[in-house]
Length: 159
Length: 446
Ligand SMILES: Cc1cc2nc3c(=O)[nH]c(=O)nc-3n(C[C@H](O)[C@H](O)[C@H](O)COP(=O)(O)OP(=O)(O)OC[C@H]3O[C@@H](n4cnc5c(N)ncnc54)[C@H](O)[C@@H]3O)c2cc1C
Image 1 (cartoon, each protein chain N blue to C red):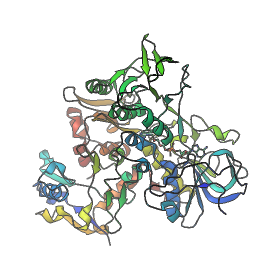
Image 2 (cartoon, chains in turn blue, purple):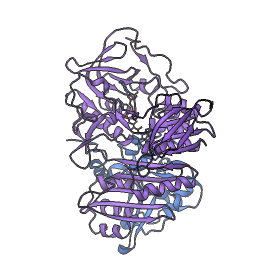
Image 3 (cartoon, chains in turn red, yellow):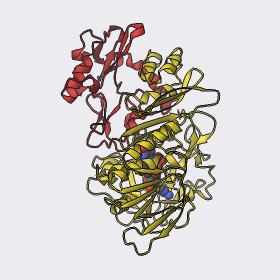
Image 4 (cartoon, rainbow over the protein chains, first blue to last red):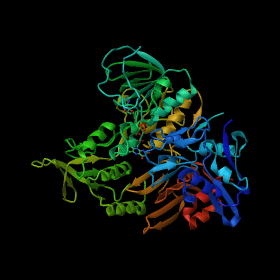
């Protein structure tokens, strides 16, 4: 069974450990701005939301890519960007209705969550259990995927 | 049966080339699915067909002597950041063979819906159960005298790109006609090749069909700062030979009386669906091939997708040709689902573009210019080249454009296509339209 990130905003304290861990894992430095998971703060409500890619099965980013630079990792199911193949056209960044694949101008490439090859650094770094890595079926991400199915590209097989 | 039309191999370093075999042999062949056109739309359709029908025979026909490639990647070939293979849609050795997709070169010259056959240039006749037309568009040549000379090119095919690479050497005097969306992409590629570039756009600003005057003029002054002159509200009236100049063989006449000597003129003046081979086929046609929300044409066995299709739009009743990558691949998927017997309805095409103009990135979505009775939220920071304009209809977002933002721009699509009710976030966005991501999380993800 493939696993997926499960994020529970109610447990998030906004400490940004996940962002730090993600940036260390992927760019080798302490740089939350380079993190592929982002914590959004809603000060009025005292609410924090950690947010990253849901690895949707009919991935908009993958379909839109003109050079086939995004593919599913057979083991983890993560949609991964093959950097040498990515030309940096950014069309995936407007195609993804979740806003979770983004252009990095210094590199001229796009980046997104790759589940760290199956052992996500953000999960290990989260001190409150707000981010866990569990069986795909059991997550609230089904809700997001259901929402995804109704939108974007109208890719909606009828029952 | 082999050899009736040239097989296109997709192997690294072995791009299909050379003359086509279409003239040889007259054997007929039949397939369950024929996809005419091997661009992003056709390839997506062929692969989706295979996903949903493991055994049905599939023919994927490309109209050019190339492995299936993406036009969108051409600018990156022009600047040398990729080789030709980098423009190919798939890179694995034997990708199409492994999927049992028969990928061949051949141009359709006629479609006969009554006999469910099509004719290829060269005389072969091919039968189909279901046909998907994905033949794309061609660049428009405006009615300006003198455009049929050496040194005048479109930037549409790999073959065009090869010629441009030859002519656009460092320091060459190059004129670009058109600063629309595709013109602007080519603009960047030419500028990065360090040619001496002059851009002529007849509209009052750059990308007039994607950005408003505030954003369009930001792009224009950005280009000027980078040393690229863009003449807006200017027309090319004629192109003359320039005798006696071995380098600048062309003289480009403008309606302001100026003449610009040029080594190369690149014409980017819009595109038009490829419909020529449909004379007599009886399909309903307007600007493109008219299709319904299943991407089905007026003939039940024929579907049309991508730049050649005029399909339902996300907003409004009118069918549209949206000649963009995202629409092409979304069409490809939905049409293929329907062709393989899985009923799927298309929500309609949303116009969307992202443009990198010498490092200044702009995006636009949907009804970026607003709708009747709608209202908007705008924030301009000219000094830092940052701009965002959101367009609402009632309580939801219907269009957006921005300059200078790359983070999470996709949620603009999410908010629009999800028809997400914004509630009191609309007022917050009116105070600060940059908060789109927060609005998205608060309204769409709860
Ligand atoms: C330089 C450039 C940059 C671009 N940049 C962007 C961008 O940034 N974003 C964006 O959204 N879009 C961009 N586009 C537009 C985008 O490339 C097209 O929308 C897209 O290619 C459409 O895909 P398609 O499969 O419908 O058509 P095409 O890619 O045009 O493919 C059509 C296929 O049909 C074949 N064909 C044509 N006639 C026949 C025939 N009679 N019989 C058989 N086969 C035939 C062709 O050879 C080709 O294989 C760009 C285009 C260009 C040229």
